[in-house]
Image 1: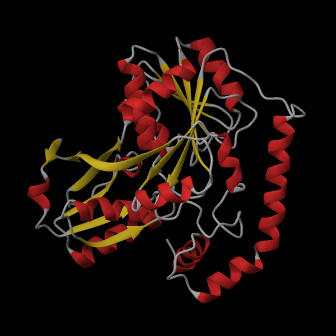
Image 2: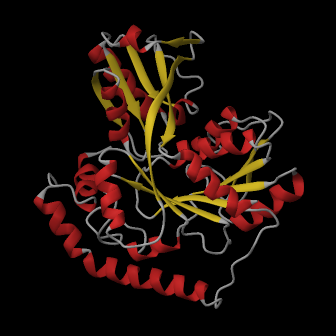
Amino acid sequence: MNKFRIYLLNALSGKKNARLWAKMLTLILFPFGFVYSVLMFVRRYLFDTNFFKSTFLSVPVISIGNISLGGTGKTPVLIWLLRKLIEKNLNPAVISRGYGSSNSNFTLVSDGKGNILTSPPASDESVMLSRLFPNVPIITGTDRILSGEKVISSFNVDVVLIDDGFQYLKLKRNFDFLLFHGKNPFGNGRVFPSGILREPISHSKYADAFLVTGEDKEKGEQNLASLNLTVPIFKGELTVEHIFCPEQESYFKLEDIKSSRILAFSGIGNPDSFDNILEKQGITIIEHLKFPDHVFYCERNLEKIRKKTQELNPDYMITTQKDVVKLDDFKLGVPLLVLTVKMKIDNSDSLWELILKKIC
C-alpha cells in the first residue's frame, strides 16, 4: 500500500496524525462529498416512497454491511451467522458483490456440493467462505436480485445472506446488520470523497442492529448512542481461532512462534486490525507488507514478498485466510502461516433472538 494512499486514508478517517496536506485535500473535496451526500439522501427517499422499486425474495434476507469505507469485520460476522443458521438446521446461501472477481455478472463460486472455484477468477472472500462451508451455495454478482432468484430456484435455500448489502436498496431485507469500527466509526464525519462515509450517517437509522468492532469499542458505542437512535448496539471482537501451516498441514500453538522472526503480509480492508490481533497474542512481526484490499498477487507483488523475505530472513511468514486462497501454488522456502480469526460478540444470544424474530 503506497504512502499517498495511507496518508489520504488517515485524513479521511479523521486520524489525528494525518498529514496537513491530506487534510487540506479532503477539504478541497468537500463540495463533491456534499453533492454525493445529497444524491444518496435523494436515492434513499425515492426508495422509501416506492418511486424506485425494491424486490422481495421468496426467502428471508439478512444483510451484513457498513456505512463507511474500509474493513469492519463483515466476513467474520458472516461466518458467525452461517454457523448459527446451520446449527438451527437452516439452509443458508451467500450472495456477494464479488470484489476482485474477474466476472462481475454472475458467478457460482460454490454449488454446495464441494465444487469450488479458485481465486482468481472468483473473489477471494467468496472462495474462502466456500472452503469453510463447502455445503453452502455461494454466488457473486452485481445483480443481487438475479443472483438471489437463481440460487433459490437451483438449491434448497431457507435464508439468503447478502455481503455488503446496506446500500443495495433494490433488494428488500428482513434484517439489516450494520457494522462500525470502534476507533473511527464515522471517520472525519464527511461523505466520500471528502470522508469515509458511503452515505449520510443519519441513514444508520435504517439498520436493525449495530455491531461495533475493533479497538475502542466502548468509545464507538458512545458515539453511536449519541445519534439517539432506537437501534440496539452490540459489541464484537476478533479473536484468534487457530494458526495453520498449509505446507505442513499442521496447527501451531501461539507459544511455538512467539519468539520467532515473522514477516506478515496482507491485502485486507483494515490491515491495522491484523497487526493488533497479533500484538494482543504477544506475536511481534518484523515487518508487515500491506497491499490494497482484494489485491491480486501478480508476479510483481510476489517478487516484492520474495525480496523482503531474502532481506529479512524470517523464520515464518504469516497472512490471512482471505489472502491465502490466492496463493495455492506460492512457495518461498519459508513456512507460511495462516491466521484464522472468529468474531466474539457480547450478548450474542440476544442478538440471535433478534435475528430469528425477523427471519422466522
